[in-house]
Amino acid sequence: MYLLFDNATVSLDVILQIGEIIHHDFSQEIKELKTTSQIVNDNLAPYNADEFKNAEYWKNKYLNLLEEYNALLRDIRN
Image 1: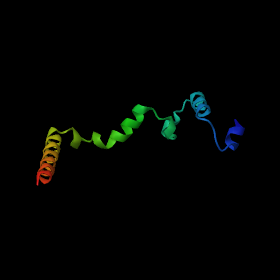
Image 2: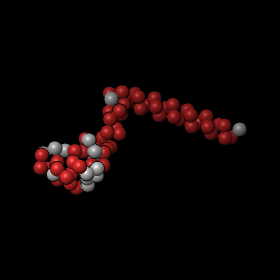
Image 3: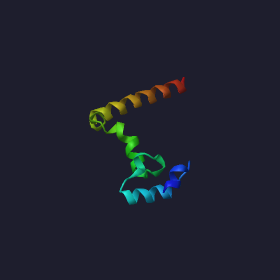
Image 4: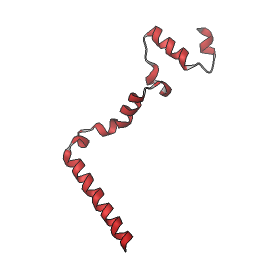
């Protein structure tokens, strides 16, 4: 174990084994150990606010995008 601390690189397998022994999840500290679901949840965290759960928000977002799309179509036709 002492040799691991002197080594600049330690394999992820060894880190996982150490984590199991000491009952610690290193995925919070080491990005490569995160599962796909953890990465998705981390990336979606800003969108879990109440603002994004409101139907009115999504309706307005859709209408704004529709207006922008129609403006682009008008520009293409001219």
